[in-house]
Length: 179
Image (cartoon, rainbow, N blue to C red):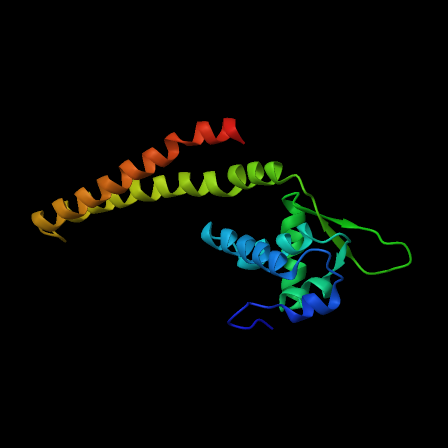
């Protein structure tokens, strides 16, 4: 369990032999979790990747669950999702029947895939949603559902969103080249 002050993961410190200072590990785990949360993904995905990224040996689902204070089911779902993106891989440990996982450390490839498979499609979906809202607004005005003043206000706000969306999408080719 975590404590409020230092966000300590006691199970992690006990179950894993850490060569990296625990504060470093904790902060990387939290950073990964927060990054995933900000792009609309489960926080646990980033935490699992952060834990595996700084682990010098493959970890079992039990290690992951205990280290992050999450359920084994969450660890299993998270590792499967990360494996499907090429962020982690399942490895065989001689003499054990358990599933072990390790991070694939090529972060640039992971970011490239996450951008192309997650972020860019979401940006494009938002563009379609803004267009839908503009059409709906016009239909409501034509049907007399909203007054002219409200229509103009909402239309101007939707234009702001459309311009912002367009500027975000204008960065897409640059991001594609960079990644």
